[in-house]
Length: 191
Image: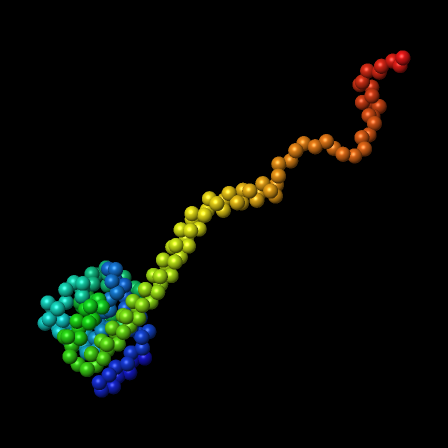
């Protein structure tokens, strides 16, 4: 939970992670969430950014389109958007870092440090997951190249389990021919 004291703010990592969204292929945070963490009004945060707009190129900060904003609202499913008149700004990791040079309050500095640590943890998690995915891909390639060998082995096993049947002579006692079968055969006279 968020606890604030005079010069420091302690935010749980999970709270920060839940406020990081993936938009336009980048991990970003909303202006209103950052303002809340920095203990300033969203309006004041935006004013500070606009006064220093040269510090925030598009890969640091951008304004959401209406479509992106509607999509985000539907994902978050909360009524805390209220009557927002302007589309929100979102800040990438570098944009969040740049905010520390624009907002000078001790609370903003402490919150910024905490956010940067969370971003670092996320990068470490992605790196670990990437290693696992690479290993899985290698295994998949090995199995894929062995598919033909496995198919050949199964065909050989099927042949061993179901060998082709040769026509065999029946074994056992042969019954003498019935009278009807005897009538069909010509009888040879005895000499």
